[in-house]
Image (cartoon, rainbow, N blue to C red; front, side):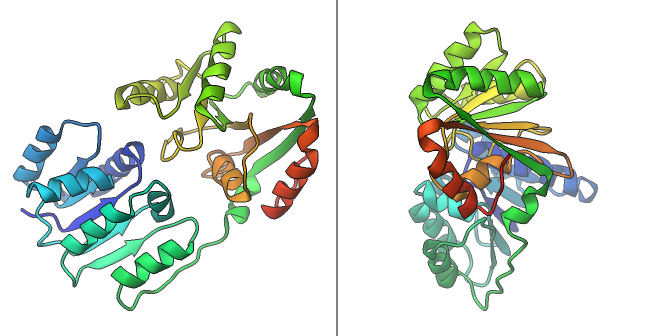
Length: 296
């Protein structure tokens, strides 16, 4: 049977996470859930779609491929959900999203979920939603009450030692260290390996298989530290994350909130530590102020 609902997510990890949650949620009903994501075998996905699925979850590019090849029947869709809509536009998926929405029945319901609502999202909503109701949940600042912010002022040569000291001080089960470039991720990963930390790296140069192995190592405890760029960390799900370290300072308050919001979830406490070179103290103060946060 043709699917009744379609959920679109910006990254493979997030799409697969949504798939797992929907399988758990709909298990008592017997509903069939299918995933269509880049990096997976397209022929296997096609066979699953041919058998029939009530809900399909996927990434924009792969969904567009299936529609183009007539392996995804859009004719019976009642609802389309765009998860992390702002991130999908940031990642350049606007054309794919418009193609998918144009292929869906005009009378379907369109739901968009987005942490921020920039002009591009408002324009997309206006073009594809009818009589839409906008619901604003509490701001991210409210959700950060379970996060303790620490700003550690260090001389530039002591930066790496400061990161290592923070990791040792908190002894977190899981820690996520953010860098601004792939080169910085690779450099820190090599240094941490030399110090005998169980560490994995996430950057854009990894294959899907390598990303999956790295994340699984974090989930099952073989690795305790994940070093990542902002783009590579999008959509990843690391349960029980206790510590976020900003090895490189975020460039804007939204990125600071997005990074830090990986910890302190579901009632758990978390720590977000900013490594602040002496030359960047004023910039860090402005960054925290813009985000409505205070650090000790």
